[in-house]
Image 1 (tube, rainbow, N blue to C red):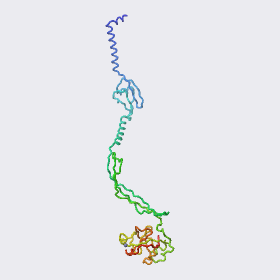
Image 2 (tube, rainbow, N blue to C red; image 1 turned 180 degrees about the vertical axis):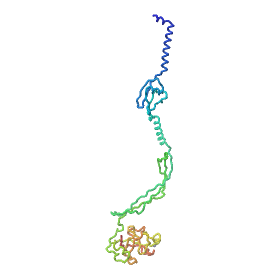
Image 3 (tube, protein in one colour; image 1 turned 90 degrees about the vertical axis):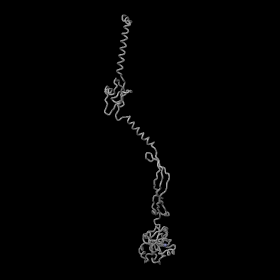
Image 4 (cartoon, rainbow, N blue to C red; image 1 turned 60 degrees about the vertical axis):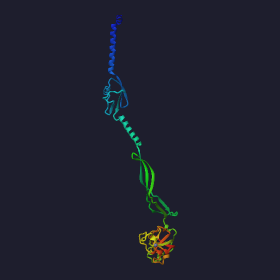
Length: 329
Ligand SMILES: [Zn+2]
């Protein structure tokens, strides 16, 4: 009752209220100095812990919690820094420098994007392009089973001059369009002739007699052991003049000089050196014995062209069908 009485006294009230205010203020000031924080520590292995600390420097928080930073690990923010607003300390592997890595990726993507959007350069380019020759097969075998292939003309590539419009991106050709083309050189066809192996023998019969055995000719003596075959050939005559040969040097396809009463020109079915006996000429100096020494553009295997000494002789002979004995080696 005495205390209540005292409280009612104004002086006591002032003292008690003063003590209370001082105490409350003291507590508030102390709390303000300590600043206890809740911090999250995230480890390199993905785990994390929450700790409570009054420290604000990263190195101190680490030390306080006895956290060991390995050599290949690094701390974000760094040890010397103050804890940041997110109140998180990250311990990461050094090679997982994520921010740097993602920068590199960005660079590569940027390069790719730049490559795709690099300016396209257009150029007009003139190039010489080969024209491949074609191979033509001429079948003159008349369905024969025993055939032979002969190249009668070699093929040669031609040349085309082509103007292109070429688009480049970063110096790499990405598109070409042919604008125009001019043939500079025509290609030459390769011609392969398929013929019966014994073309020269078509329309022939084996001779019943061998005139070589009955002749004193030196040519006949060379072929007396060979059985000839007989064929009717369409014969004409020629001389060494330019009208007959287009030249007048008298040199035959075989390289030898043409000789009167010796040289005949025959088709390619007859080897150079083939001996031909023509009974029609049996009263001539050669007794009718000739040797194939020459060729001619118009001379097929059923034709003969007989070399004569003068142009008028050749003209007088004209053209006639003659029985021929052919001696092939
Ligand atoms: Zn002539």
